[in-house]
Length: 379
Image (cartoon, rainbow, N blue to C red; front, side):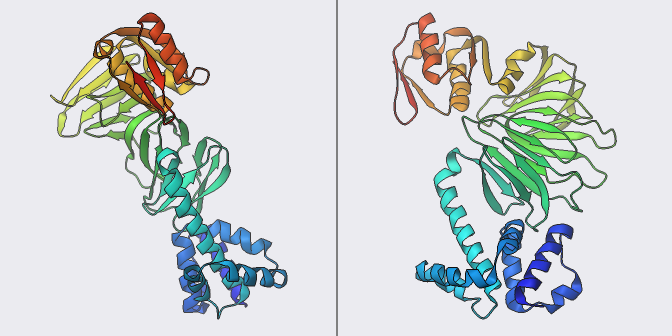
């Protein structure tokens, strides 16, 4: 069996079963094993297979030679490390180096304002909302797909241990996530969530939230769903609710839309509150108490539809939400304005930050300007 055939077969087994058969593994050279290990660690198994399937070895030799001549000395040394191996082996190595360098360059440019997926605490992947692609585990197994602005994890993925991914959404964007159990999560601007690729075993289904998310949890009485938000755990069996847990906020809020949830202080296990639909549980970080009260659900869930609703909200409190959703920095030099309370409703998909500022200034006059670096200056 040629070098390229062995590499291809090994990649197919890793993608399908998460590991190679022992007889194939024993037949590999050290160079081949090293390359496969590199491809798996970098999450390039699926792409490498597609590349090999499209490769015409005779036609591509000249192309590889040309590319080798074009690369800089450091890159060339990395590629030539495998020069003794068959052409397909060299092409795969070139493919890995090119992909790895491109990813690093892309992340340097876009990390701050891009949706980032961290795979098994290893690879960082930029998520483009206009693309469709496979989601590949660190072991090279396809575990889900990205379909536009949604990640959908495969319920049938052959995963036998808890492996976590982490999704981070920057200011100005919203993204959706469907977990392996079918639970749907809408993640708000400036938020991140850590979750298992697949829920395995007989324990609880746990995720870890920083920011704001709306959950539609699939009911499973044998496996309670837990949202860990700093010092608070929200436990459910099957329900719809919204959790707001930004680090800079004084409260962690949980609003129940449907079903039932239990709020637990992680440092005081006897401190808990049961919520009914239409109620909010607010955990106060300073005094570690949980308050419960009826609320207007629209105020806490309208962001899913691209709306921002404010009811008797001090402008100083409105600033944070506007900054997150519009990806701007608001510098308010008008101290008196911070205490003014407003009732307002904005559609982020239609109204710009200029429209918002203009609308508010029509109620309480003030001057503002928007600078090129997305700073809103209020005087």
